[in-house]
Image 1: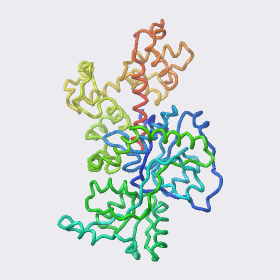
Image 2: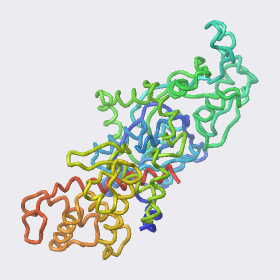
Image 3: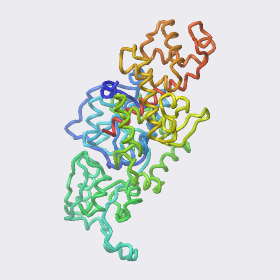
Image 4: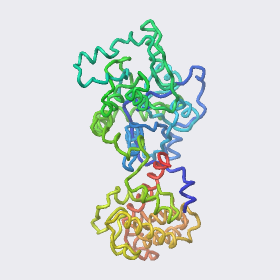
Length: 482
C-alpha cells in the first residue's frame, strides 16, 4: 500500500472559496509587457464543466491557503470552495511556491483561475481579465517602532516614524520581486522627486516573512496590503503600519483573456455573494478576527509556521510504518474520525482517535481505547486485517479505498456493493465510479433488497464521502507536509 501513498498525486479538493485581501505573500507577480501575446491554452467554462473540475492557482500563506490543526483553511480557499460548489464542480488547488511566476502558471494552463490576493493594475489588465472585485485595500509602509515604544506617548512614536512619503528618499525598502509593490514604489519615487532604494527579494518569499524581518530588525522597511499588515500586527506588536503608500486598490481573481464564460460566471457569483452574510463572515474570520489569527500564528499546528498536524504526529508516523502506509493518509483518517480528540465518543459507543468499538479493539488485543497510543495501535491492526481481507483487489490504490470504505461501513456492506457492481456491469475491483456508486445505492430499497445483497440497508452516503474526504485531505497534507 505504501506505493500508492507515495504516487498518489492527483487528489483534488471538493471544497471552494474566495478571498478579499492581498495574501501574506503580498500582491502577486505582474506580467511583463513583452509577454503580451495570445494565451498558450484555451479552457473556458464549457471545458471546465466537461472535466468536472475547476483548477485554481493560489498561494501558500497565512491567509490564502494553509493547514491548521489538520484542516485546510484560508480566505481564498473558502471562497473558491463556494464558487466551485455553485457550479457543481470539484475544486483542485495548485499552490504557487514562487509567486513571481503565478501569472505564467495561468498562461501555461496549470490552472483556470488565479486566486491569490491579486491587485488589479492597468498593466495586468492588459493581458489578463479580472473578475468583479472581492474587496479593496491599500498599500502601507511597514516599519519597526522604537525599542521603548510602550513607554512613549503616541505623538512621540509618530515623531520617530516615517509619516511623510518624502522621507523615504534614499531609504532601503524590501519587497518581493514582481509584486505590485515594486511599481508602486517606482511611481512613488517619481511622485516625491527622489529615489527610493527598492530591494527586490526572491519570488518565493512572502510578505509575512518580510514583515517578520522588519519586526526582528533584519530589514528596515517593507510594504504590505493594509489588511494583511493588520493581521500581522495582531501578534507582532512592534510593527507600525500607519503610513499609507497608495490609494485604495481592488483585489480580484484573474483568468485568461480567452475565458469569457468563466470570467462572467465568477463575476456574477462574486456580486451575488457580496450580498450575503456568509461572504462577510468569511472575510471577518480572516481579516477582522485578530485574536483568531494570533492564536493560529502561535500554534505548532499552523502549517505556515510549523510542520505539524497534531500532537500525535510522531505516534501516527510510528504506527503508519507498521502497515506500510504514508502517515499523512492515516492522519487524514484520524482527523475524519475524531478531529484528533482522544476523548470523543460516538452515539454508537465508538471511542478515541480512531473511533473504535471496545469489542473491536479487544479483538486486536487492546482494552485501553482511551489511551491515544493504544487506540491507534488497535486501529492500525484493524486496517492491516482489512488489507488482508481485500488482498484479492489487484490495484494497491483501489485496495486502499476498499479498506477505508470497510473501516467506515464494514466489509459486509462493501462486499454487497461489489456484488451489485458486478451484476449491473461495473468493475467490482474498482472503487471509483464503480463500487462506490453501489455503496451509495444501498440506501435505496430496490438495491438493498436485491438478491445479491446479504447485509441489507446501508446509509451509503457516509462511506462514499468518508473515502473521498480522507483522500482529498491527504492531497492537502501532501502539499504542506513531508
